[in-house]
Image 1 (cartoon, rainbow, N blue to C red):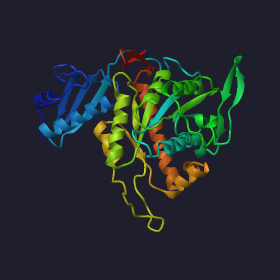
Image 2: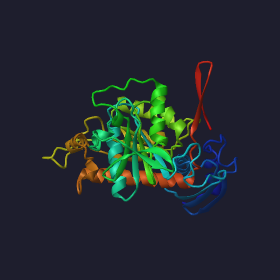
Image 3: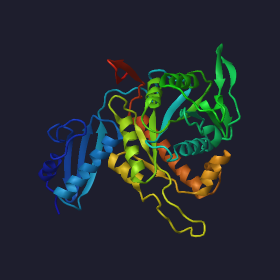
Image 4: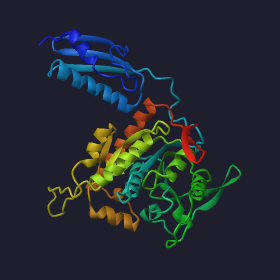
Length: 379
């Protein structure tokens, strides 16, 4: 079949440019359309530099031409981004931590989905790959990172840095760690109001001698509350990873977690979603997979929200045991668990690379309060 250029143009007129409200042809986004028999080349320039916008644009062009013109058409999309001049890669605005290149928030809408487990294993996987890594346990009311790294009895020392006294993070498995758990007794409940928790977090962030880090992972508490805003007020987050299990009750909260980061007033890029407890494989039936909490829920959520799917972690007894004894499961060698976390970590690093190449630096947000109502805006 020989494609007609005008048919292609008419089809593209039915697609809206992401974030601009006008179709691709009338907006001038499509700069050229070339047809050769059953092949078509579409040159398009958009202003939105986000990975989601670029992927959505390309997919919609492919789907629309296949549906409206010719389902077997061979299509090549040459997409360019004409965005405002971006900030230098890894430049951190607001209040940076000197020497830290990327700050990754690990979040979950719901408690109990394994967010801290994923954080710990991402950290050791990064360290095994040769990166310099730190973990800030921001779960003030339920810190679990010290247990997972077998440092629950440790206490940070004070060191002098440029004439100032700083906390030296505890280090294990090549990962630097700070947590409120280092400053409380195991049986002591932290009963603090928001301002007290925020002050403690700021001390662990800015009064610590983190040194040079490629990645600082922040293990956030469940939900979308005060601690999250405090962290994003204090730091410009490079990107966020959202952890969920496959069942609907967890996915509903994960959706809210993604929506929080994507709000215009916050605008933290979502690097992807991790599905934890994806399936169970009995040791005696290694070829079998039992989807106890549902199959592929987080993957489908990622597709629906147009954010990357970083991978899945199976239900394996050794992951729980490793966390309980303070030796993250990703430290194991030549196991399916190690391979799962290594794959997820590589996907996350790749998304960080894409994010830093395509987007300007994230800014810390500023929170103001007027007449009893809080408002969030960029600094």
